Image (tube, rainbow, N blue to C red):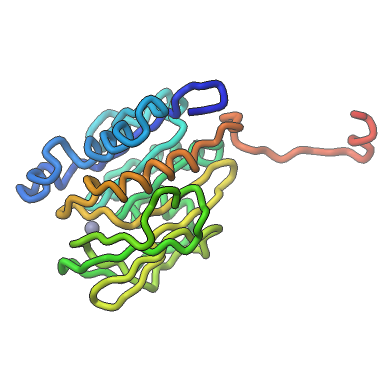
Amino acid sequence: MDATGHPIRVTVWGENVHEYQSDIVRAIYPHGMHETIASGFRHTLGDRVQVQTATLQQPEHGLTEDVLAATDVLTWWGHKAHQEVDDAIAARVHDRVLSGMGLLVLHSAHYSKIFRLLMGTTCSLRWREADDRELVWTVSPGHPITHGVPHPFTIPRQEMYGEYFDIPQPDELVFISSYSGGEVFRSGCCYRRGSGKVFYFSPGHETYPVYEQPEIQRVLANAVQWAFNADSSGTPLDSVNSPTGWYERQT
Ligand code: ZN
């Protein structure tokens, strides 16, 4: 909720492709992963948020100028169809982040157009799909995204994401994960880009019920509140011409 008591407006974006191609995914997420993620926010944050969903298949991927203008925090899950996201829509989301919209980048969205645009690196990583147990460790105790999150907590079955993860050094590293195979990964990373805050969180593979897990819902709910920018003007920063004496003239 913002300072004036209005709920934080959250748009949950889902690629929504695996759900139509895999019986396993449909059994875990019968209404789509985006609906499970959205209901996690509603359940955890109640009237502090106003949640809507958008998907790849909608006109303009459900991310029209109006939708984005009315979004305080956007969450992004994608995997199979990153290249089907229109460059113009990725650029529009990028502009909104620089203008102050929060962005949560989830799991395989490490390879999304929007995340790679914001990071400027390949965002490549090590991976394995083999039912690893993941432990998520808090490495920034007291950070708002860690409130109420057990240290560590377990995800019983998960895809392994390991180092090296080709991202810029995070402004704040909140979680690292370890796997039964021995790998480690920077699984919770905070960035500021322009006026916007970006949080990457790696747990969330489509064939495991990760988004049903209370600890995951808590992390994402905390991250929405962290990424919300109450002071955002909604416009990107711009350069300011300042002739000699400008400061004295205004006082
Ligand atoms: Zn995955």
